[in-house]
Amino acid sequence: MTLFVLFCGHFINLISHVMKNDSLAFKVYSELRRKILSNHLVSGIRLKEDYWSTYLNVNRMAVREALNRLLGENLIVFGKKGGYFVKSLMPKDVKEIREVREIIELGALRLIFQKHDQNGIRELEEICDDFTTMFKREYFEGACEADVRFHETMIDLSGNEKLKQIYHLSNIPLFHQKLGQTQVHMSDYEHTDEEHRGIVEALKNNDLLKAEEMLKKHLIRGEMASLNLEL
View 1 (tube, rainbow, N blue to C red):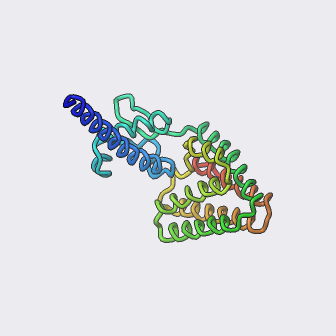
View 2 (cartoon, rainbow, N blue to C red):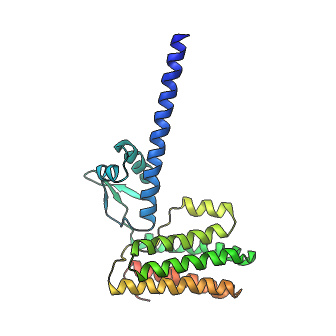
């Protein structure tokens, strides 16, 4: 009986340790994934285990587990001389990202239109207000987060669980890799604000064609800006 009790105690401690590490790893994974997808961590930047361990107050094993998960999702790569780096996007990647986002988000837009969900449209409008406030205060990280939230909310408002799963599992980044605090980049934020509001306004006016037109324009401009090209 004593050996059985000792075994059970050891097993419970082991499970607790694994669950704790998994929880910490998920904390790191979620934070890094969010920063990569909103491009706060730009292509080519190295993700150092010791830095993120200290920054997020977790052990290095949790950081390593999170990095390996991101590696499996193809969001980061392992360097030739070691270390983890945010994956750099090639022009072909950027084009394919825009195409996939256009397919998914246009589908979500049509579902939102069919529902005539005025509360959902107001939610999108509030996110637009947050975005405007952030970039006008030159809090660009907050503006990028609001941009991510706008598109994720569009997907959520579709009410289609399968579409949500496809979107969230696809790890599609937005086009903010080259955004900074220059006047040119400030102009990009202004265009984004106008386009988001144009989509919302079209939904309020029950004008699906206009909403689709604004969304396509928004995504194509994002692709061109990411490649440093002009429309």
